[in-house]
Image (tube, rainbow, N blue to C red; front, side, top):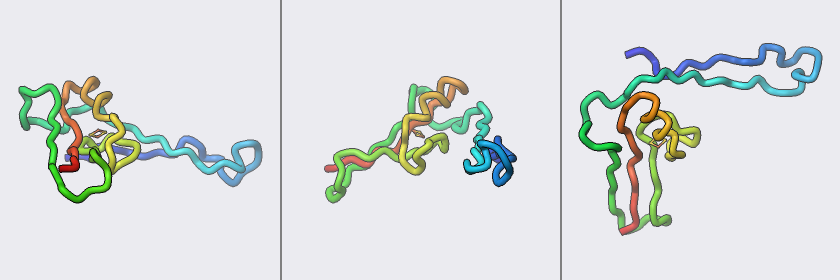
Length: 98
Ligand code: FES
């Protein structure tokens, strides 16, 4: 399978003259719109699993399983855009306080 992400640099003038010289290069992540879940529970709108744990500090923590989160490994809701663009049904893994 080909890489899901490719990274390119939008600014090549870092270190040069002008206003962009003092700014670090901005990274641009290009995400291809293709489903990453070919066959797991495809009858469900979104695949979300929960694990109940007795000893965790937060009531709920969502971990990303779509690889689209800007706060990876935590879910930031990026799966919603991915699912809409691809017809996929991925969702986070929830760790819940028991
Ligand atoms: S952003 Fe990846 S599962 Fe939510």
